[in-house]
Amino acid sequence: MIPPGSTIGILGGGQLGRMLAVAAARLGYRSHVFAPEASGPATEVAAEWTQGRFEDGDAMKRFAARVDIATYEFENVDPHAVALLAGRVPVAPSALSLEVSRYRPNEKELVAELGGRTADWRPVDSLPALAAALGGIGAPAILKTTLFGYDGKGQARIDTAEEAEAAWDAIGRPHALRRGVPAIVEHRVSFAAEFSVILARAADGTVAVYDTPENVHRDGILATSTVPASPQVLEQAPEAIALARAVADRLGHVGVLTCEFFATANGPIFNEMAPRVHNSGHWTIEGAECSQFENHIRAICGLPLGATTRTGGRVTMENLLGADADRWPALLAEPGAHLHLYGKRDAQPGRKMGHVTRVER
Image (cartoon, rainbow, N blue to C red; front, side, top):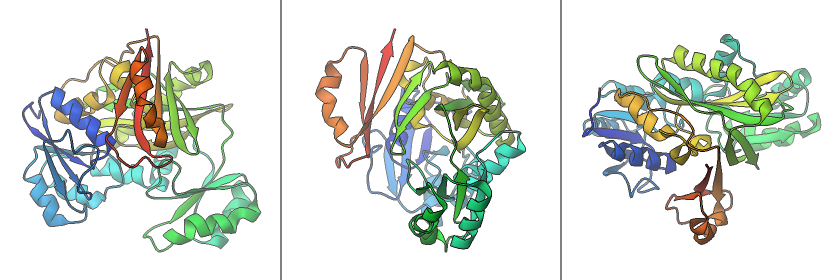
């Protein structure tokens, strides 16, 4: 057990790191952020901040000497950096969870091995390979980078086979020199709804599962998450939860794990996973007895997991993107609304500036 009073190292200083640090402080822990940037949303709430590259072994060693355990807020971290840290200080989730979740072919192959369903997909490393893959899976499809994709980035829609070249020029070609397969193409799934499974797993295998949020995306970015979900999602949730638990067990995952799904006529289709706290779980701060952030801290530190019981009859989280954050005066005056602003200054279109959660009792 890592007792309160210890220092938790967090790789990444964005809004997820910010909310992790707030949850850690409530339990008596200090947070020390390591990030490439000089500052970020976690600046105001972390006790210490070290600027450095994840690939800088010497900087990581110095960081390891100043923390009692380390975790990460996103999966775009070099697994070698996590492995280096793990040789000096406990790290959770492990490098294995990171390695599987950050590389799309790995996560899809694991899910298939565990009996889950994914969209029909193919790895592609050239325009001819993309054309051949489309001949197999058919259009419409989506071309995705194998690494570093999030919030709709690193993706190109392909409505007809004739659009393959433009998609490859936009997505595949810029990443063709990357080690491994640069992209995958997957058949575009016809779905009724999108949802996610959010769970926290302790080192002893104990698992706490949150209510399944139904998610709405706009332009590839999460707009809202709502619990309880619609009847079709609720009907498919048990199968999805069982798969997410199997993934967590296979990885020996410690901390929060999020798996995203499509609700389809043929049951839940796995989309992607994140080995961390997730945007679709922000509603848990006010909408559950113990938030995803607190349960992540509890899990990695060896504390008992908290209850995931919903605190209201209906809970909705709305992301505030770009200029949406300018609505803060009205949101503060709205009964039942809980406003979170991340301290970002540049309100670019589509940038996550904060969120608001509405709890209906």
